[in-house]
Length: 485
Image (tube, rainbow, N blue to C red; front, side, top):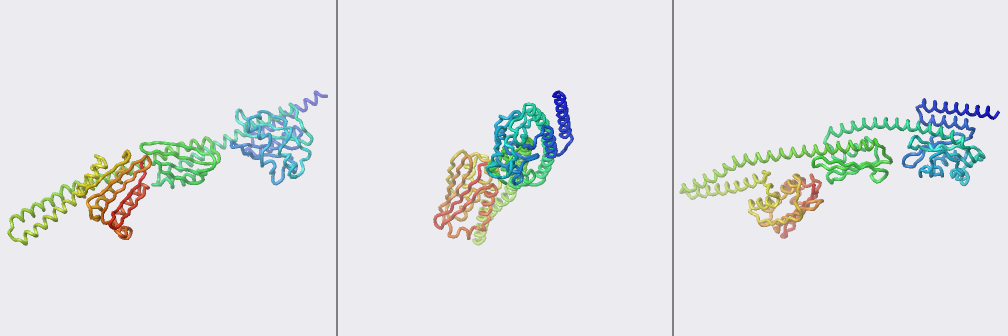
């Protein structure tokens, strides 16, 4: 008789496992599948209640299935099960739960009793079975019955078998979800790269667009020491990716609750593409600047070869005519023509020098002193630090120095100026001052000045600061601070 009962029991177990296996293989909704499996399992082992947790990588758990729960555990939509920790979860997270075990006391049921949340129907103990698939763990399955405080090895073996099947199914679903997410994210990546390529966007605009497309919590972009931040950049996990192409150095950091390998792959591709994009923009701007410089040099050559020669000829012609004539009035007129032509020739030479770009080949200090000599100024140049400048920074400082020295010549009433340039790893500072007449109302007189406005625009285009201060009978000081790119 015992053999017959054992045969019937074994037959029921095999049938249960077969049905559970079919359920797990044929379903396409994980929650419904786990709910069906739990109910079938409890019927097979003649237990009253059970529940299944899936535990996420960050340690949070979700209740995926439950059956036959006492009122105390269903209090406020299963709050005792969904909130807080328990012994079995603690052991699982610590890596100490590798097989089905009897749990001698349940912290969740204790909280139900203490909080008077409702009846426990005599349930005080449960069996805990970890849900595994290979080396990966996914959660816990707990089963219990009133007044049952111990589970036999045979029962635990059956529960483990079912848990392994559940683990394999959960892994299959996670792999499917991961592949589906990968596909969706790669499609989004293609859209993102296309949108980046379409227009001339600043780093802030690109950061906001990326955040919107990928639904990350926050993103920061560091481009050649210029920092941009969008969203929540002080919470959750982060991925940092760096790239260097040409003179462009880029670091992108994204922030989110949790990341997977898809996010890491996307970040690598996106960062490298962004770096290429910014380098291309830099090269385009450099190409435009070179075109502008070529045009300035061409114009300078044309002025030198044509207008310069004509003014020189005019001066000589006026002088020759002055020597030949005997009329006093005519002599005076020709003398004025000669003086004016010489002044125009001097102004033209200054203009040609401003237009040409070769003047910086011997260095900033030499160029400033040479230009000051052309203007008839004495300039004292003091350089602190190692003056290693990018093309854009050098061009900015040089053009501002030219304009400032012109202002000294025309408006200060003195022929002496002082130039200080200080270079550090982070920034460049240039200060140009004179001890001339100055003015009372700086802003009123100079706020609309084309020269001052142009200098300020140059500095602000490099994200720098420009200050101009003038005091009557004391002098004028101009200060420029830009990033050392």
